[in-house]
Length: 287
Image 1: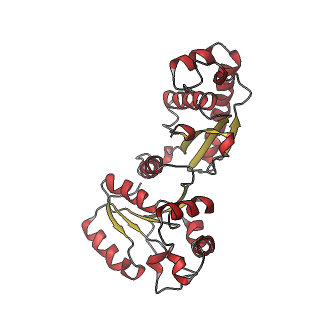
Image 2: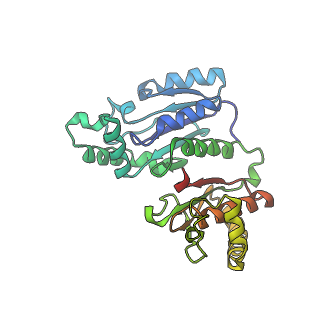
Image 3: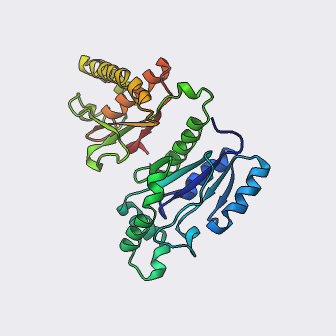
């Protein structure tokens, strides 16, 4: 368990959402510092340790200016420092920079945007590999990313370390928009009856009572939920045995609004009632 002086280092790719992650930590009472140069990190650490406050510092590629920019290295940190790396795929980063009309930090060297993103990715690869958690924000809105950051911290501060459960995220999604990149396991729900073809249900979602009543008519729906629960019951102690900290289950259907949403809500409710964990639920297509 981390004490009151814990420090979280937030780093990652430009445009991936580091500021959003830092703001989430600030909302949880952390003392936060953004874009701190690495040369000032030791003095900052001393100040924070004197106050015994929970603190977070955001370091991005600009923090390493004056260092060897192609191989940035964090100073040797104490064991209670946690590193949170915020990532996103190249297309998402390109779109964000284009829409915000911001200049990429590596573009000051004359590189086109696509090459600048790739250069930064290569420069930060070593830090990414050593991070305690990598969050891919490609398919997340700021609120969902903030929820994941909060859950990351809650997981780190569980009182009974020996009984720590993996942090579980449940995604519903549409196959038309592609698979969630963060998924450890993907289940396809397109074999189930589809309420989309019922006019009065088409604009509803799997969270609506009318759609839930529709699914209640079909035994294969409840059987599917039962099989998922049995599989998770088998998997969970093995995830704990392997000390896996994070597990993401994604369930998809054609539109990502009915079948996948209903299954995710059902599984999440079972996990809470079973006492297994309180999963993070993200309905990607409903965001």
